[in-house]
Length: 298
Image (cartoon, rainbow, N blue to C red; front, side, top):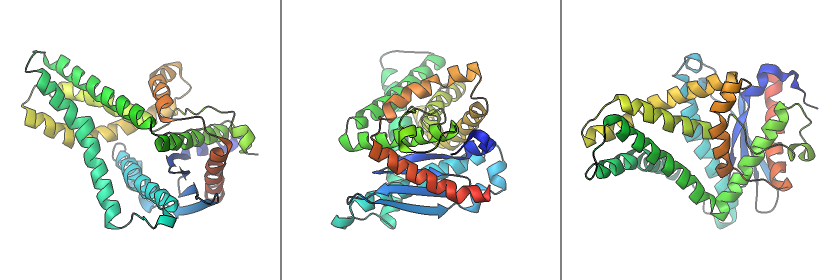
């Protein structure tokens, strides 16, 4: 039985969905449990770099860069590991330079679709209608949000992605069960919701909201400068978004905070699916292995 006496340890745990698997991360280790085509669950572990416990991890705003690195590099690494396990029999492995190229292409896609394209759409609209600076940036922010929701909804219609979203739901259920202090077994975990207030979806929504507010203060500039500012402000926006999420997480029980995170919980309906028991089994495997590694060090 895992009870609530863990106190501050609880918030050290999080994760993400993989292809037929779940990654769970603590303060010192991460674990990934992946179901192979033969039905066997493969568990991989990795000790996290000292970067996560160094001085930079305690500096406000700069520590957000660690989270960004985590999401981009470790997330992509284990997504690739899970894909390789599924394709092992076909010998279609992605590694080395191809992994780095995939990461770069993914970054370029995100920047192009969610930061550059909305700016180009607004520039096109300005050829037919004139708006003041505030309205222009509000329209750009709404377009960015529309693209984000539309993209997530669109890929969620794909069978393979919908299954990844089910693993996302299983990850949330497992963390919810742990934080509620119940025994981490399939029967208990299945009864918990697929949404979680600290989901990475909050990061995306906060980033979109912040970009809209900050871009307003940049005023009206030529198109090339607007595009350039959108690109170079991404790291700064990410750091601020992380601090906001961190602050809200520390006061999660406050009614105002509950209201502020409600859009995040609503959007998670797009990024999660109700998992089956075999999917929850994988999430539990990843999490219990992580607990076994972390708790002796706590």
